[in-house]
Length: 308
Image (cartoon, rainbow, N blue to C red; front, side):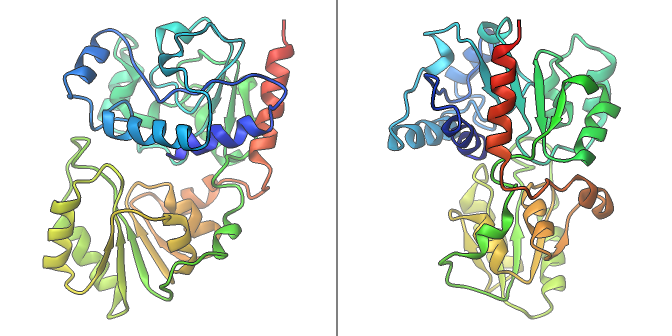
């Protein structure tokens, strides 16, 4: 939904053009795996793609699943770790979705053996396709990071990214709780990376030090299992499987995450924030708070459309 809502915001500033939206999709063997229900841990799975489609329909937006009515003059996407065959010859503007995954052994394999699919490295491989005309990024810190990893510096534009460019707006909310320790979980087990959830929960309990403790589960998580574990190791904690995580962060005193973009919201709002990432590095990477990211990206799109 983060990708979906960012694309929608950008489109509002390109009203002079016709638009079509698509839930993320795949082709070839990956499409066969999707149809067999073996890709539910990704954004092409039926559950997350279904959430995207429902949002598009509720907003009255035109849907062209898999871009079958193309080719289009411009494709705007939040990831290039997978570029579908029917857009590879299109003008593409890539928009950073949020925080990127840490560098792992899989990332090193992908960057060494270029025939391996980039998605094996997760979002750590963002920007490495070089299949885009421009890449709109969150901050100068991220621009430097993507260039160090091999992205073409001339294609990168620091625009900020929608949903993370004006975190102060989340302070105006109706979430009924305040002054608590909030834990935003990551679906590491669901994406086969593994996690010692017991240790993570007990760490959160220790950091809370008796203060009210709330858990916001990631949309990909297995809710029943996660809720059962929290009840066992953090009895009395509130668990939310749905809801606006950013508004919950705005009302908290302390934010605890693992590998989640929500850490940026906590830092932007001046919250005591804990993450598995190096915190000094996260502060350098935090998206610029300009409140104009969608507009800035739309201007980049116009310039790309005007190019020969």
